[in-house]
Length: 487
Image 1: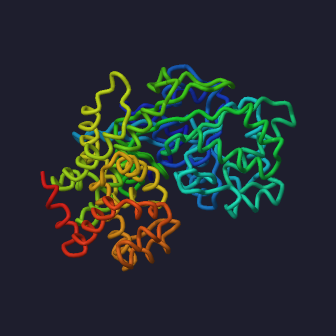
Image 2: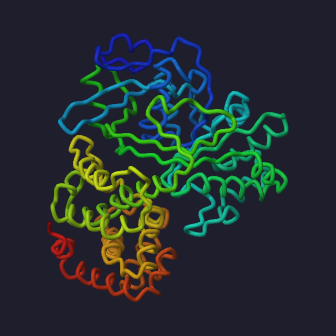
Image 3: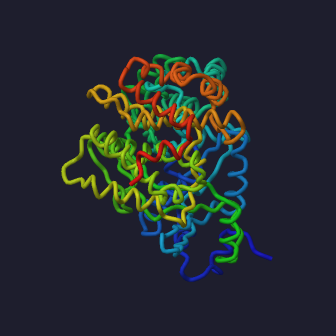
């Protein structure tokens, strides 16, 4: 019988598996993290694990917080394994590099014990609260006009005096209020989500909830709490049953929720941490004074390319990212989007090799070992498209371009939504009902029915290109659209 991963099992693992060397040393919780998913465990937790294994940052261990009922599964996985899990880096040549990550030293499921969550957040040793709650998880968003007062969960938690918060921002405000009452210095709030200016968006969400609950508290937060922006990058697919079986066969242990990712990882961080921070630069992170240029390159090229590939790739019959990247028509389409639309909107930092970065992206997309699903890239598109694609489209239109390839991306999204409404694809989106309804009408009805797209109706050049692409897709599908982009 295969034994469960945990501290007792570490000694029996193969010699080439890196294991935490600090579990018996004194470690203290310094970071509380909302949204413990695969990306956090492959990225931020991995960086901290590197530091701890090097003998540093032992007072920056992580406490993960799960807010949703479904987060009980992560609780069960981590608690039963002493907080340990495996991370496998899948190299293009088929080599696997496996390690056990131990930096998440505690996990709390908020519905189980709200009092424990508050006490952990208020502990003076906690100096950073970080977030990976997806683009749609923020309750204030200047791009789509979302406001805290319009969120029903925020309304509920504020009406209850934040006695039992429902959102990450409700918890953060409740904890800052209690720290202020106890005379404990505030923590830094660090967003690690794929949102341009994620620190500013996190500030809007926190201050917005605070202002609804206590305007004086909101003023204190505005004056005393830091919200550094970050740029995070590592392609991390969903865990499959095959991943679980592979770990059991290769390591001889059962890991309830292993993580796989590509070898590449990047983390660029604004250096604004008045309460202190771990020396993440020793683990490969980059600290800068101004992150905007780096952030825009990543969001507009990598994340934008993912959106360009996701819908047309599935319309063309592909399942995995590496399959779509190997299709020369799709590769040409994605390259056209990046080079014709994305690149002209960027301010490139001195010394940054943009051409090499684009080639590296195609190498990463083509890694067959990662097996990243195009369907994963399509999740929550009503939040992803406005973050990754529409800023590019807006800048190109403002520069006098019709943004024809950007229009093609929007047309493929519409075609995907229309087929999802017929049951051909799964429309995993909070706005699925309205998207399906809008996609089922005339092409302009989609632009009119999706609020973030409606301004595009005012651009004659974009509209003409979009209608042409929509007609091509309706007449001949993805093959007809991609013919013009054949390399």
